[in-house]
Amino acid sequence: MKMSPASRADKKAAADAAAWMFNVVTSVGIIIVNKALMATYGFSFATTLTGLHFATTTLMTSVLRWMGYIQPSHLPLPELLKFIMCANFSIVGMNISLMWNSVGFYQIAKLSMIPVSCLLEVVLDKIRYSKDTKLSISVVLLGVGVCTITDVSVNARGFVAAFIAVWSTSMQQYYVHHLQRKYALSSFNLLGHTAPAQAATLLLIGPFLDYWLIGKRIDTYDYQTASVVFIILSCTIAVGTNLSQFICIGRFTAVSFQVVGHMKTVLVLFMGFVFFGKEGLNLQVVLGMIIAVIGMIWYSNASTKPGGKERRSHSLPITKQQKTDSAEHDDKV
Image 1 (cartoon, helix red, strand yellow):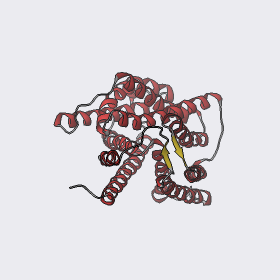
Image 2 (image 1 turned 90 degrees about the vertical axis):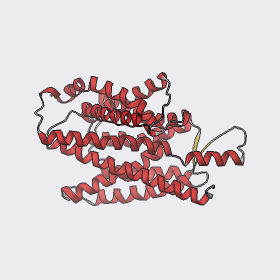
Image 3 (image 1 turned 45 degrees about the vertical axis):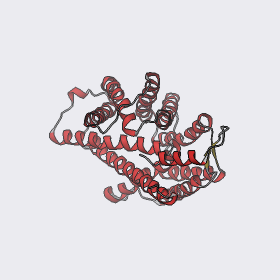
Image 4 (image 1 turned 120 degrees about the vertical axis):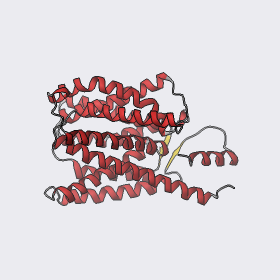
């Protein structure tokens, strides 16, 4: 028995909402845990910690594959190497950018990922954005910028680090969507291919890079029960964060993930005021939050309207049956 179009649309909307909620909860959770781990327990080895995150993710995907929940799949080695290069440059670039730049310029660099991701979709996927969609993205950028940008100073090496971080992160997120579509990979399949390589490379270079960034060696860290518990908790939540990122980008696009993802920035700011005091809460931050939320709502509405965001195609017309088969395929997670 086939589902009606309305039932299929309701099911997809519920799955989309669940995917976003999964990503928001795990992302905000790992930010809070890592903040406690680094600020309270002094474990500031960010690159090595990311390597541990991917090692835990590798363990999870291996167990699921052994249990039969992940089916065998294929990802060509050249595609895997391109993805790993972009992903690792993203992680390393972001860490170096944060060290070499002011917080304000670092936030500007993060915001610039949205127009870069838009450019990649326009050039590589022939995506066309409506005027409303473009304006809504601008409102989101304005709102988050008002919330987060304070001091802004630029230097040559910091600009280079930020440039590499922005482009590599945008390419990595583009590839998540592109590879899932091109090779019919589920989020678990793609993680199963990429996580082991990322874990190996980051655990290899992480200790050296962290020593260069913070001047401390990870083998001399004073491991205590509480800090080890937080490291394990961080790695556990990271499995959900990595998986939810792949699910969201796979179901939507890198641009949508970036735009709606800034809701996490607003939530982190709000929760910080609730749990850690209101000394940073002022009219500028409140105004920025309101503008950002309005922009996100506008983007969600504008991008889902006919013509709001569509792929330009010069292929032969698609038959009604092909459309139905495609819709049924897209509903599967």
